[in-house]
Image 1 (tube, rainbow, N blue to C red):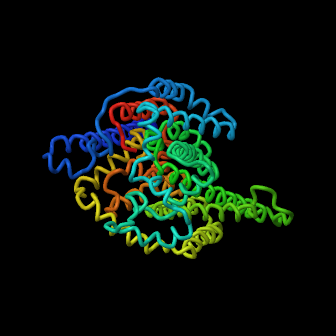
Image 2 (image 1 turned 90 degrees about the horizontal axis):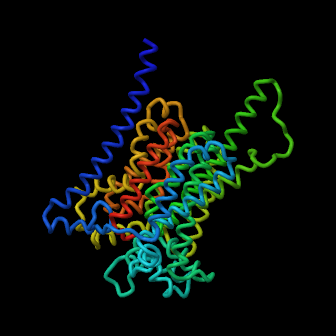
Length: 474
């Protein structure tokens, strides 16, 4: 009987992978097919010509095609082995550079102007308002008054739909000499491509270095890079990913300190009262505070990023400590207090943005399609490899034992579910949910070593297929 269990259990898990990927592929196929079969008025009400992805059908190749294919092949062939053997810091450097090249190559499939510089130059984007901000304190004080549409000075679509931190970021970029869509795009891509590194750092800090090494090639080749290059949400994803990573570093440091102290006491030896070297409990406080500042700034970039709280809770549970919570809360509240002192109260903005949301096309877009179409768009961003790995990552046994990587994936699933059920994310979730997608991708850490290359191939093929068949709006 034990031999039978050993033989059938792996087959069962492989079957789970294939069923997960097949179900995800079916959902995506149905989401693309239904609008094509529906009536013309209903199809127009989706306001997405290539629903569930915001864009339009346009098969094409471009300057980025060959570099993208070459990089994908290199990562598939050599990535897993390099991830296993490279020293940690060198691995993060190589991973980051590959993520940047992958994102730029995918953008260049659409051409430099259409795929890169023009996207943030759209009249509905943040840059359209930058030149009109001549007084930052006045902008912050009056920001909420200009959210609702129908006024002479109403903000453009994207500015009105977000807290002032997003506009403030692009204004500050302009003030330091990095104005215009090209610089804005470069900064967003560089920040967004750091998110895979942040996920790996978080996993390692929580004692899951092997998981981090397995997941990193999938994070690098994620289809999400199509929307990292170029959207402001890429910057949001980078900021919040590092918020989680820093909290994990602080929590992991605290957890290690407590475990070491308990070990010393169990051996009848008092803890060392000497000065704390780097990486000990004393260093955890400023790191947790910095994490809180990033979490706080995150909710002033996008109202929906309040749901990153799920990830913060997962980190603390996975590390089995709440000690970093107080300094992290202090950092977050400091940011909230700063914006409040400048004249913007987050809750006021949130209520007004809900009103503005239903003044636009959101009132027309059918929730009956988008509640599941959103999930199909998310699968397009995270890839079928992530869907295949979810059954392994969310296995009850892993969650019961508080596996930190599994908890992070479960937290991302909760964030996506909450955002979807809110009804405030009808369409365009392939970019809006980028901050959550980075942590869904961590599910690939649970794929067996022998399955990594085949699923990496599926992951890269999905990204290349999407970018060559569709002309995305972001």
